[in-house]
Image 1: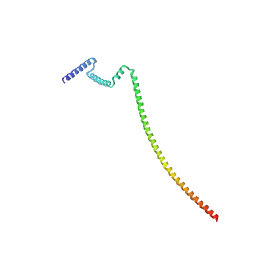
Image 2: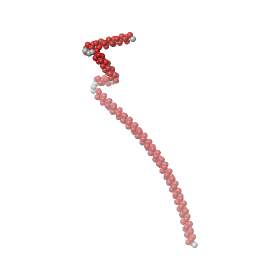
Image 3: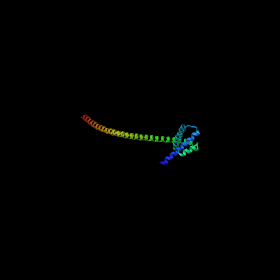
Image 4: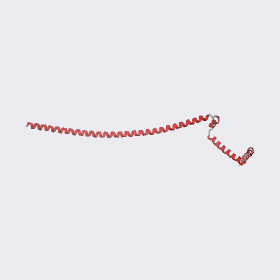
Length: 163
């Protein structure tokens, strides 16, 4: 604690010494000087935050070569454009997958409907065929009775003519 207290006293003495020297050199009042000192601290804090946000490599590029900035901006624009294209491709793929799913579902439903229609047509065809066969059987029976009646009629006429 004692060393920390001594360190604080030394720091205060240094600040007071700097303040006195600044007052003599600038002809500023102590209030103006303390205000300026506060602004410098704020700007120093902002600069340290900005330096912390920017990587060392980017800071060196910016300081060493101003020609790199347009190239970096162009690469950033290209990166953004490619990200947009990638997002669009993902959206298109998802859309196609949804459309493909809907098409497959629709085709399955259509196939099921056609199979149901085919079963219905086959049952109608079987019913119609059985009706037709019954009708043919009825017509054959009627033809046979008609043939028997004609035979009876011919025999009756023959008998009557014979008498």
